[in-house]
Amino acid sequence: MKYFAEELPTKWIQLENALAVLKDLNEVKHTGHCEKLEHIENLAQTISIEKDELLLFLNYQHKIGNIIFFEELHDYIILQPYWLVKCFRCLVCDDDKKNCTETELYDLKNTGQLADHLMVPLFSKDCELNFEKYQSHILDVMEKFDIIVKPKSMNSYYMPCMITESSDYKNIKKDFNVQDIHCTPWLILEFLFLPIAYFNHILFKYIKEQIVCEVKQENADGRPAIYAGKAVVYLDKTKCRKLIICFSKNAICVQIWKWIDVDENTYRNIVEGLCSTIEELEKKLNHKLDYKIKSKCSTGDYLSSSDRITFEDLPTLCVGKEYRCEEHDVMHNMDVIENTWLKHAPAVSIDFFMLR
Image 1 (cartoon, rainbow, N blue to C red):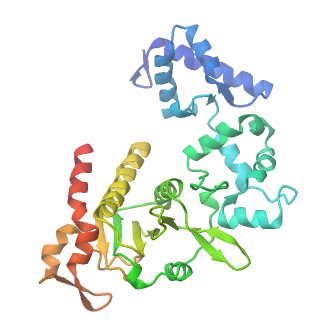
Image 2: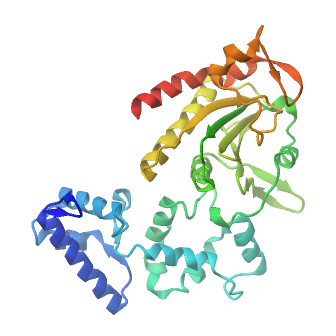
Image 3: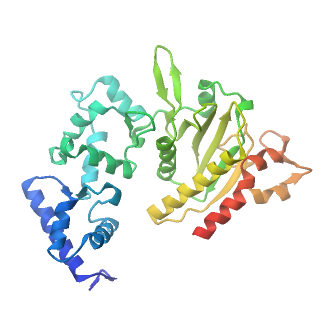
């Protein structure tokens, strides 16, 4: 049967109608928006839909926005997508001082930190969420949508949209006692257009997979180095190599801070990892992101688009193994930007071009 210009099995339409009835029934009974997968499986079997076909159906329904379903989070299905809006509203629209202390409210509204013990009172503002019953699933789904993120090795969640605390690059360097000699050239992925939400998706991937560095504070525990549009993470267990990730206008800028040597594989893995994450984002959003891989000298202003160089620019811009840096009004050695980042750009670009 054709359904909105798509060929779909007739029994899929029957199951969709059955889900619509279930949604309405749950609304009337105020029993919430989460339904166990096994209940849907039983419903599907009454119209001869087995498990494998049911998963195809549920993924399709998720794709067109009728439900929220992830195969890797298969315990429950969320029947009403606006449920996600209600969850979000519980966290961002809270000025009720009864739910948290002034310090906790400040942390949530400035650093984005969502303390564990705040979750129940915040989410309990909407009783239909049944947060205590569905807590694990609710948090997992919100993570999938990048509404919250849990940094590696930390107990607290963070809300990216609530991170308003800012610090400029120079101050962050000072906080970590980073000298110019510790800095590699900048790796810059320059886009035709890059919304901050897309950058945040990439930033959160680093936060989840790498250990976030902590900034020392007088008479207090260290605070995670997570800021609006920036973060600092460790690259390995030695803690002798850090990576700062920064957002610039339509660009992702990263730089390694090193107290020991960085091997070639590390540079390549970072380039490949960024390109791979962008490819995942393209598939997720069904939106092609056009960008170029560039580099810039280690002390250059990452916010400025001037003096950003691609691998293809090297033969044109270099004279006797040197290129002119207009920002510093000096000549730089091309080997520094080529042997760190740019020599990996052609191979990575070809690999990902072949996959597109």
